[in-house]
Image 1 (tube, rainbow, N blue to C red):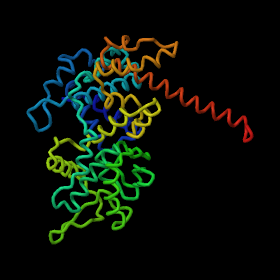
Image 2: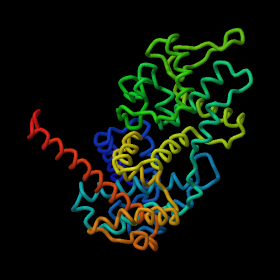
Image 3: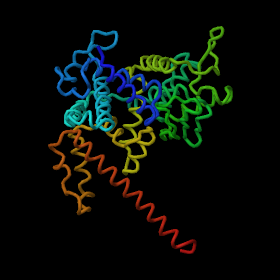
Image 4: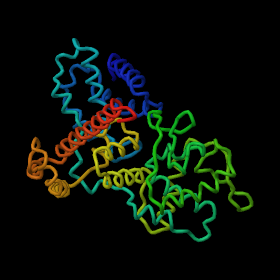
Length: 386
């Protein structure tokens, strides 16, 4: 039986998160799914006694099965449950300090999800080579359907958009001459947490040419409010463009179409989200300055560069060491920094190395911004004749 007070606290927490982070209804339902496991584990005991319950929450979750499945919860789901649970208890400590003062902060900290940074094989993404092959390999008798699917593969990679946003993207939101995309919920774009941003397309000619080819098909024939990834209606066996609004399962249909495209080109099947991973990895690998690194993060619509680093910039310890060693010459020029960063990070776990690199990235981004601001101030002081 679920403790009524615990239930009320969970509902209040979700209301707080909805207003603080502008959660969408979908995200709110997911949060409730995550907290439901906590409420069932605690049962009729108060949340303030959670540290005294056995078995522990982590041990309890290992025995929980997925919805409609006999298999345990997926690692990604376990991580989200623990992340939201920890945030919930941190909120309880701050909003009800007297009641939860006896709940150890270390216990809350122990709810952190296990790091998977060392499992490099888990990071699957669409490579540039795969994206080009998908976009540029015409299929026999492909017609509009094949061209649309190849354009989808190209657009997903160069834009880094989420599938839900891409499948609800109107033609009016795409400006190819400036390589910009207006991911605005006000235009009907389904972004995560209803965020709004102007994002930019990678300059990869092989992919952009396919995007432009499809754009030239849909833009003259459909109204600006119609979908860029337009639905197709078959009449007498001939597919025609439709201006119908996207359905609730449009992104699922997109995944199925890409699956067929990948199978037809002999490539392993990867979800639409793996194109976003490919976009991020390509961008981060080609970043030359910390400002470039930050730009990739902002183009993914992340609030924090650490999110980008933790999810998309996963490196093996050997690659970290080789990259740091290659930077040693420039590092030595800065007397305030250690001369041998490779030796410094050699024995550290990958997650610690990621934190160090993120801190360095943030430092140099701020430094570059200060330099730009100082230069502008000097120019303004000198005036036009300076």
